[in-house]
Image (cartoon, rainbow, N blue to C red; front, top):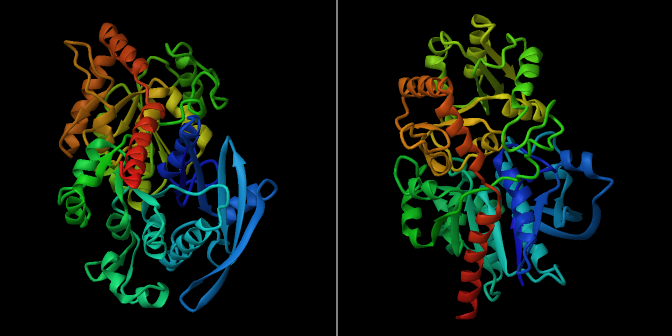
Length: 477
C-alpha cells in the first residue's frame, strides 16, 4: 500500500475558484477506489469552508509553527468525505477572511500553510506518508520544506503544475524574514532576483507533472514557459504530462438535477432543455436554431479578444450565443453591450451559477473555447459529457482532447483551429454551422462525441505508474 498526501489550496466541494478544485475533489476518489494506494488531502481551512462545514469537521490536533517573528497556533481538523480523508489547517490570522486569494500577504499565508503541513507530517500516526504530492504554487513550498527539514526521511515528492502563469512571487528579503532556513538554501527559491514558489517546487520535487501531454511540451518553450522554461528544460527527464479527467458521475446528464429534462448517452430529450433555456433567458424559442455557448472566466487567456472581434459579424448568421461568466471589466462591458445590440441572438450573463452553467452545457449545440493557452481545460470535457460539440484552439489539453471533425472520414469529436487569430475562429464557427445543417455529417459527429470519455480511470492509472516508479527508486529496485 502506497500512502500519499495531496497538498492543495482548494478542492470541491469545499471551496472552488477553478479547475484545480475539481481535480483535487475527484482524483483522490479515483485513486482511493484502488487497492494499492491510499490518498489523503490537506487544505487550508478558509472561513468559507468553516461556515459551510463546521458541523461536520472535527478538531484533531493542535501544535504551533513560526513564520518570521510570529508564533502561530495551528489547529488541524479532519473529515471523511466520499471515502477520502481530508485535513484542514486552521489559523484565524491567515484564513479567517472573506476571500481565499487576492491579499498582499498571500505569499506569507501559504508559507504558513506549507510549514504547518510539514509539521503535521511527523504527527500522522498510522499513516506514514510515502509520497507528498503538491499542486500549484500555493503548495509548492511543502515539497521544499519537507526535503530540507527531513533529509533523512525517504519521503518522495511529486509537484503538479496546473497553471504555470501563477507562480507565487515575493521579494527576496522575505527569505530572511519568513523562512527559517540557512542562507545557502536560497538558490532553490530565488528566480530573477525574487523568491518564486513555483520555482521552489520545480527545483526540489523528485517528479514534475502537468495536466496534459501537450502542455508538458509547451512549457519547455519560451512562449509558454512564463519565464521558467530553462529550469523546466533542465528537469526535462522528470517532467511528464498526465491528462486530467472529470467526475463523470457528478457530470452526468442522465442524473443531473439541474436539468429540466435529463437525457441519455444518445442525446434524446436534449432539445427540450434548449427550449426551456431559450425561454428562461429571453431568446426566441426554436430548438432548430444552433446554440453556441461559452462558460468561462472573462479573461484574455480564454480567447475573449478573438470573440470580441468577430461576435457581431458571426451573429448575422441564424444562430444564438450565450456567454456565462465574470472577469475583466473590458470583456464584461463589451459583451454586455454586444448583447444589447443583439437582443434576440446574444445573452451575456455576468456572474456565475453552477446550476445555470449545467443547463447551458446541456442545452448547447456547440461549446466555444478559443484559449490563448490551456494547461488542460475541463470545460470541453464537461461539454462532451453533455453532448455539446467543442470548438477549440489547438493548444495544451484542448489539442489532446478534441480531434477536428473530418467530413470525409467522419472522424473527430469537435472543431479546432491553430493560429490565435479572430478570423480563423470565425471561419471554424461558420464551418461548424455548415456541418450542423448536414444531417448525415451532424449525426456522425454526435456519434463521435458520444464515444468520447474522459473519466479518471486512465489518468489514475498513469499516476499510479508514476508513484510506483518513485517507490521502486526509493527501495533501490
